[in-house]
Image (cartoon, helix red, strand yellow):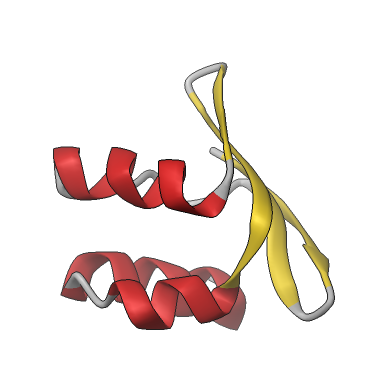
Length: 71
């Protein structure tokens, strides 16, 4: 697993939303099971509410942060 994916997954598992926010672009497109959620705060609410995420099969970075996450 790539370091970027590991860091994002680690932040989610730890519930460290400050670290997550630094890793993920404010306008992130987060796609799991064909459903896309857009925006960092919406993604954080989604993930916090269900307690986890699927690891990315692909991702795109912009400005050093994850911009697209596809699982």
